[in-house]
Length: 241
Image 1 (cartoon, rainbow, N blue to C red):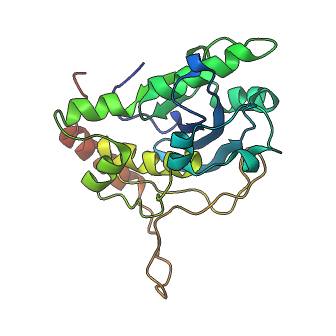
Image 2: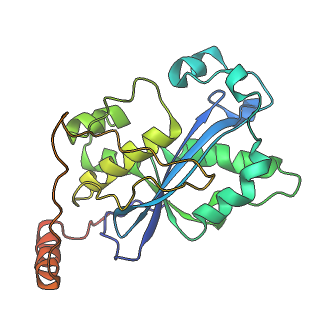
């Protein structure tokens, strides 16, 4: 798994990913019940996302339900992983996955791929993986590095995160990752565009104060962008890790 902090080029594609599950161990038969992904290209959120709730064909542990709030009844009519597997693999193919505590999510995804009638291999055969928990521990040794702790450290608004949710957590993690790696926090290219499964993209959890007019966006010139990139290189030299 890659934990480099080098700034990607403008065409570098990353997919920030999170899952929710029925429990903690796929070896005990636990399954994925939600996948949420948001796409970034050149460190900017695009309009594309991938999001599904999934029928796991088993009961959700009470402890897990207390974390994410998803019930067995809610999932009764949802598709199964096998129904969306190819669409998911197409979405992540060739990207760098940005995941907090990647072994957990990748372990579950690999387990789901293995259970398919025609197994599809492992996630790392389709995409590389950057673990932001490993990165955070190197940057902040001895400190708490949960997603909530990182939001507080980097002043990322996670006020909408009363319960865990895969798509919301992926969007928050995108902001945290950008702050951790020295770039400005997400400039969304989004709007109300369809996601991978036809849902409408939700706005970021950050909100302007009530009644405040939209901020005017002034785009830099090419010369200003080059000067800015040169300054970033000085302030954030490539990591030795």
